[in-house]
Every structure is written in C-alpha cells, then in structure tokens.
Image (cartoon, rainbow, N blue to C red):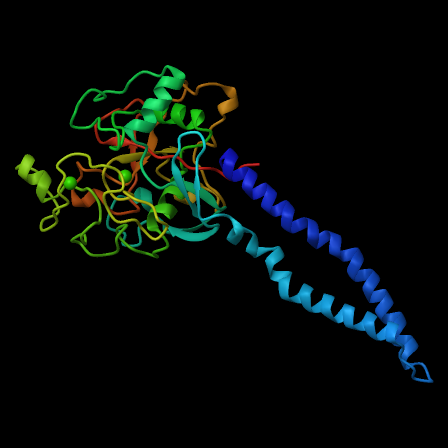
Length: 345
Ligand SMILES: [Ca+2]
Ligand SMILES: [Ca+2]
C-alpha cells in the first residue's frame, strides 16, 4: 500500500491487536478468581459474600464484552479504514477497495485467450485514485522533478488542467508514482477496482451492449461526427470526440470515475499472456513489484499492461477483462494512468 495507506493499516492493526493480547492475562486472572469464588460459594455451607457476587458479575460483563467483540479483532480491521483519503503529495482523492477475492478474467470467453481462465484472485485492501491523473497534477510533478513534458502538452485539445494527462509512457507514469509516494496499480488491482463490486459482467457498466448514459467517454456518436469513418457505440453520445475532463461520467461501485474509457491506464505489470495460469492467487503482479529503491527503472523494456480503453476505442476494446500490451515507451494521445497504494511490508 502507499506510504499513507500502509501507515494507516499498520496503526490500525496494532490498535486492534494490542487490546486483544493485553486482555488475555486479564481474562485468565478473572477466570481464576471466578473458579475460586465458585468453589467458595458451592462448598457447604453455601454462603456467597458481596465480594464474590461482584466478582462474578464483573466476570460475566467481561465475558459478554469479549464475545461481542471477538469478530472485530480479525475481519473487522479493513472496515475501519477510511473509505476516502486525500493523497498529501498530489492532492488526489483516493477510494478504498476492500480486501477480498474477486473473479478475474473474461467470463464470456469471446475475446483473446490471454484473459483466460477466469480465476479467483485475493487482494489486500488498497486505495485507488478516484480520477485519472490530470494535467494540473502532472504539472506539479514536472515542476518538482524537472521532468520533461509529454507529447500533446501544448495541444489545446488535450492540455486543459482538469483533463487527463496524455502522451505519457510507462516510465513517465512510474516516475510520477514514485514522486507521489504511490504506485501504479497491478493489473489485478485495476480489474478489481474497475469491476466496482459487480461479478461476471462484460463491461464496467454491466452487460448492456449499448452503454447507459454516463457510462464514460468512449468512441461514440460525438466521435463519429468528428471522425466519420470510425466504428463507434451506435446510439450512445457522451458529447466528447477526444478526451473529457476527469470525473465527467458516473462513478462505479467503488466510487471510481472513468474506469471505462477516456484514457487507457498503465498498470505496473509486465505483460505475460499466460499469467492467469501461472500467477499466484494472492496479490499477483507479473514481473514483480517495482523496486523504487534501486533506481529509475529505465532498464525495463518488456511490454507493460494497459487497461480500460479510451475515447479512441471501439466497442470490442471495452470489456473490463480485456488486456492490452505495449512497449513501455509508447506515448500516444489516448494513454494515461492513475495511481494506487500497495499493501507491501
Ligand atoms: Ca467520446
Ligand atoms: Ca480510463
């Protein structure tokens, strides 16, 4: 998890674990006293004293309290994490995606084979940026780190402050995440976050082949007006031929915007076509976690995963399980990213 979220988790677990362990001696002592008092009570002649009755009452209250809260010491920890936080580095709103399992992959088996088989993945809880990283946020990063401007930086069709930054390659996205004290999402994190709690659906919005109003910025009727030769979602008009301001469309079940469309989003993972067969069940990430401590990672040249499609994309690219792989130096005007935190030790 990010430094921010990681610290929250650690504090939280400590807070819950400390009372649990510290109550054991107390319970043992109370139990010992209870046995002693009971023995004294039942030994003839039966003569309970006020002290013994008070002790028994206190023990009963302790036992009831412990029984009522025993579940809280374990599974309840994640429930105590705040649902929404603000990243102190880039000011990004982040939403909690709770720990647990989900079914990853193409439930319809009608695309490429690299998103098969559908398999169970467990992820620790993590925070995900609510929006794609904007030009305004990326500008802060560029100024802080002296990072070069991406292509299209001066193109007024894409460079408004609240629009998603485009033209960033995977290395740019990693450098931003490092500056922000965050990470790129793993591919599994991205898919779980995008599904928003829905199970086995084809798209972020469900199964309807025609997106409902507010589904996202896709290749739509507005795009066809600008680019007449395009194949688009017929009957769906999102009003944008190119990128749209982040958050212009409806959030999904986890409160995340633009998980379908607007810009493709770089993930951390190395692309491995067969990874759904070979990867672990828990917290999978192909190619391993990024080791920021050991350099800028310029040496990475293997294809990386992109998810979510964009304003440029035809319907066949919108299934939520669809995986796209590109060279990490790819930097087109429909590529962007968002950040996440990781539950790493
Ligand atoms: Ca559109
Ligand atoms: Ca997107």
